[in-house]
Amino acid sequence: MATQMKAPPSTKKAIVEVPFNYSSLVKRHSPGGRYVDAQTDADSPWVPFGETAAIKHLAFDVRRNLFSNILWVKGPGTIGTHFHRGTISMVVLEGSVRYLEYDWVATPGGLILEVPGEAHTLVTEHPDGVKLFGWMEGPIEFYDENAVLIETTDVWWMMNHYETYCKEQGIPINPKLYL
Ligand SMILES: [Fe+2]
Image 1: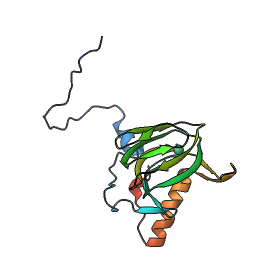
Image 2 (image 1 turned 135 degrees about the horizontal axis):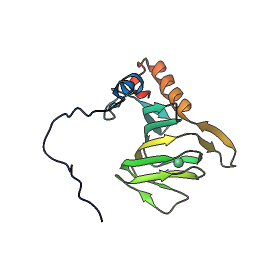
Image 3 (image 1 turned 90 degrees about the vertical axis):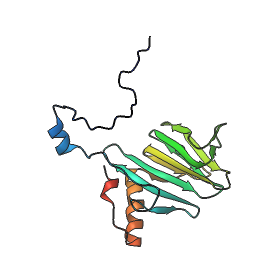
Image 4 (image 1 turned 120 degrees about the vertical axis):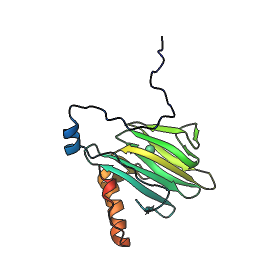
């Protein structure tokens, strides 16, 4: 039988110091939680991804080959067939997107899960394209129409994509993006 939670949401606003035996270790070794703004370019710029898309990089975690970003396809278009060797979780922020391999269309607020061993081809037919927020584990392998590997992307590819653009544009590298 389900039990009633004893600490449900309330209107009381107060900080409680939570006792934790290892808080000094946390202080020394944790990368720390943080907030990365995505409404403006203050924390991270839109970096061109081909002619018709851009990526706003939000986090790089080299320990787990994990990265977070917003992918913006600016109008009807395709992200070519790619093969995953890690797990992807994405939420549609704007527009819509579908995959040639599946029978669903993803719309704002919906969750897309992708798992290792899957190859698929992303298409947006929405007039405004699509914005997708995601947490991704690399590597992701991109293939041409003859199933020949073109390029593998992972946390190092994403970091290089971000840093190269920042250097070109004279934008300081934001340490908040590195976990
Ligand atoms: Fe994918």
